[in-house]
Image 1: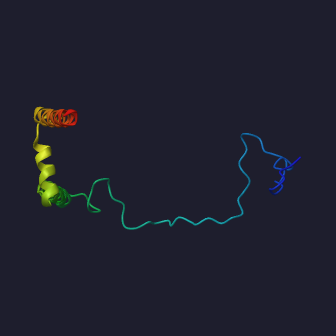
Image 2 (image 1 turned 180 degrees about the vertical axis):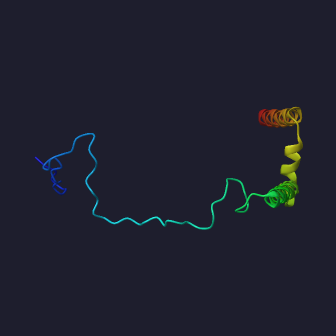
Length: 124
């Protein structure tokens, strides 16, 4: 019996198989070749030039200093509020845990007082 609506599948077991340790059959499809030389002279990991000399370490220190300055500049600009919502978010970030809990408690008291007042008006 087969599938009524689908194609009939080829019998995968019609051809003889291979043993576990044998190599797979050669693939007739051509794959792209990897170039023998990717580019430039070989470099050691972390070096900025082909020759990791004293000049290379100075360049590394200079690159690190520039990266640190850029990160510091990004951090400073990220703290500046952007508009009304940005300033509100900055104020929320400055709040401590106790300040946040006190604000939530005040809000909950206001809601309870408003509910009590509405209930008192409804009974009159």
